[in-house]
Image 1 (spheres, rainbow, N blue to C red):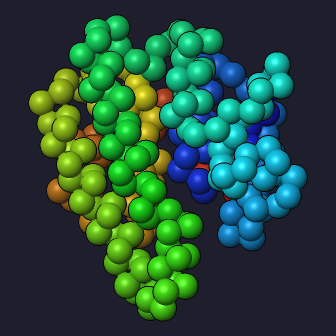
Image 2: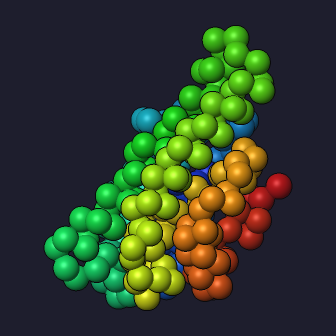
Length: 210
């Protein structure tokens, strides 16, 4: 396997966590998003969306979209599980992860912020947009798990929900979000970061970190 990513990409960060939890160590290729590496012709032939991550499998398939890759890993390497056994519980975990990957992350990512700058918004308004999108979404995530047992989002082991949460909290800090009103999410993050699989996936620990 070979993972295509960028150290600061929260979507690639999710996949690094999942790979670590499964005990997998693929090769890596790096595409500098701020220098346009994701738009290079060779990479666009691999992933026409021009996004990271992409995962090349040992059989030659190319997989895209971080949550789809995580579920592919879950199907191929079911231990330790990233999804609980109960049908309702699996739906809740998926919903939490998708609240981040589908509702928060896309509207504060590099492509959208670049478009806002291109429309003439000053930098402080672009940052304020990202801060609003993240803060509003994370407040909802806090409410989604307020009654769930810890120390992780949904119980005593990390799931796809935690894999989505930790990188998004990293993004929140980059944009200067106030996280004081999110004690449940911060407690989950601390529990996750105590695990080597999460700690080793952090941006600062990646070979292409700046």
